[in-house]
Structure formats: structure tokens, C-alpha cells
Length: 388
Ligand SMILES: Cc1cc2nc3c(=O)[nH]c(=O)nc-3n(C[C@H](O)[C@H](O)[C@H](O)COP(=O)(O)OP(=O)(O)OC[C@H]3O[C@@H](n4cnc5c(N)ncnc54)[C@H](O)[C@@H]3O)c2cc1C
Image (cartoon, rainbow, N blue to C red; front, side, top):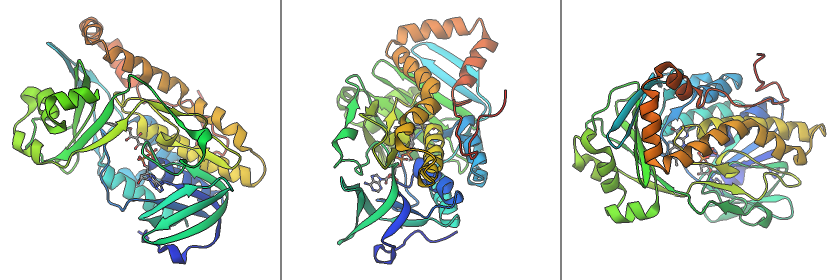
């Protein structure tokens, strides 16, 4: 594993591709671009290993992208998942959902970035990237500021990224009915939960999910209307209330390190500029119920890295990127938006759950459809849709 802690003073003045963000989208973009022969700089404002609010369930589509990138080793030791147990009011339903894994974001993100480093990318941690109107990237690390140039810039800095703040055409459009996210990784004794099963509990103002990681600890992630959080007196109290009889120790929940996110459902004004491509959550995001965000990030990131290399060879242009990015996530995002709508009407969901009990194999098929494939036909050959 190569070191990430490159000092800003040791970085060259110019790269083929600069990527803001070293999460799944940024690392996938870096690996794809480096393997296509580009010189790549990844800038991340954090330090690994780091925690991130996430349900930590990687769907089969994301696993497929990792395999196409030659990065399947990042999942060594991940917890295999076999079912999802859904609760809403007095209704409960267990559905088969094979093929996914649970993996902590500290482990996944650090290993993926290591593969980018091993592929020849320079990785600058603890540094903030800002895309300038003149086509350069201003990078700040501690008190040092440098202006670095590249032929293509990729924004993969997530929901809370700041790299595009100086480019008004990329301004966010945030859904008025959006919910915020919160989560924590808690002690294994905090709640009752079997291995291999995702627990999802839906309530009027949001929902909460929990899954056991391979080290025994439990990842909890939720989406809630901000007034639900305020009304409950904070995220730990709301988590305890929504997890109900599964809670074994409220004290362990309260002492966990909870993190929050801004409003989740959002989209940028555009996904591309003259030399800018946007990938992963930095482009758009829908509420996380179906657990596909990492898959979208890996797929759009990998495609952005390939597209950047094609732009450098002058065989592609940035103008083509919004269509490609949209095509990759379109149908899966649509399913996710419809699910988010259904979740705002728990009565409808309960009727759906009741009906599903009479058609168990159909219900299993629907549950497995989430995250099972992405409409990706990416030109580079790094990620191509399998033949039917
Ligand atoms: C409650 C919740 C539950 C979820 N559950 C799941 C799930 O079960 N399964 C799933 O697949 N997805 C889930 N997701 C979604 C998933 O977490 C995201 O879709 C995924 O992390 C997106 O990856 P990314 O690389 O685009 O962004 P991120 O993972 O957010 O990475 C962005 C990186 O950019 C860095 N950064 C930000 N600004 C700058 C800057 N200016 N300069 C340099 N670096 C910068 C940050 O430090 C960070 O490392 C969930 C999300 C939430 C909120």
C-alpha cells in the first residue's frame, strides 16, 4: 500500500487529470484514468481511514464495477448479505436480497484509494481543491496555496463538496421535500441484529437501516425530515425511537459518534463544463433507501475517468458527459425516486407489504432488482454492459 500523505510542495504543476474527492467516485475515476495512461492527481480534504454517513451496503452493480476496475480485492472480508427485513407500523416482511455485501466506509474508501495510488496516481490528503474559472485548480493544504493545471478536472467531492463553489453554472437544485441523513457505527451490543440481514424500519418522517459489519460492529444510517430530528431531541434519540425493540443499550447508542448530512435529494444545474466532469454524489443524489449511491458513484466515477482520457486523446468532449452520466443511473435513479415517494406514504407501503406476502417470489424479485444493474455502456471497455 502506497502512502497518501503527499505534501503539497512535492506535487507537479500540471497533470492530465485532477480529481477533487477521494471517495468511491473519485477513486474509481482515478483508477480508470491512470490505467488509460493519464497522469492523475486526487485531492481529498479528509484523512483516511475516515467514517462517512452511509448504510454501507454495496449492491451487485457496484461489485460489478469494482471487478471491471480490477479492484475486487477491496471487498475481501466484507460481510455477505442475504435478506432485508422491512418494518412499517405493525407490518413486517423479510425479502431475499442476494449478491450484496456490507463493508465499512473506513475500510472500503481507504483500500480503493490505495489501488489508485498503486496505479500511479498522486494522492494529496488534507487538502481542499477549488476549481477556478480560468481552468486551474487552486489547492490549499495547511497554510500553503498552489495553483495546479490539468487538461480535465473531475468533481467527485460528494454532497458536501466545495470544489465547484466558484462556478455558478453548477449550483445545486435541492428538492424542497428532501430529508437529511444521519448515521453512526455502533458497538455490536447496541442493537439486536443478525448477520447477513439488512434491517429497515420506516416511519412517518423518515426511515432507519442497520447492518452488521464483518468486524461485528453495527452500521446505522437514516434519512429523516429535519423537524423529526429536532422533535426527538437529536439523532441518537430518534435512532433509539425508530429502532424500538431492537435496541439493547440506549447508552451505547447515545455514546456513539453520530454524523449528519445536508438535505439529500439534489441535482447540479449541469454535469459538465468545458473541461469539467462531475461524478458520484457531487452531481446528483436521491434518498438512500435502496442502497445504490456507492454503485452510482463507482459507475459514474469509472466512466468519468475513462471519458477524461478520451477527451485528452481528443476522441470525446465534455459536452457528451451529461448524457453518459444520466444514462448510467437513469432507470435505477427513477426506481429510487419512486421508492422515496412511496416512503412518504407509510399507509401505501403497508398495503404493498401486505400484498407482497401473497406473492413472495415476486416480492423477492423486486427487492433484488434494486442495485442489480446499471444502464451503463461505457465506451472505454473498463466498464461495459454485459451482452444479454
Ligand atoms: C443515510 C445514508 C445512507 C446511505 N446508505 C447507502 C448504502 O447502504 N449503500 C450505498 O451504496 N450508498 C449509500 N449511501 C450513499 C453513499 O454514501 C454515497 O452515494 C457515496 O458515498 C458517494 O460517493 P462519492 O465518492 O460520490 O462521495 P463521498 O463518498 O462523499 O466522497 C467525497 C469526498 O470528497 C472529499 N471532498 C469534499 N470536498 C472537497 C474539496 N473541495 N476538495 C477535496 N476533497 C473534497 C470528501 O472529503 C470525501 O472524501 C447512503 C447515504 C446516506 C446519506
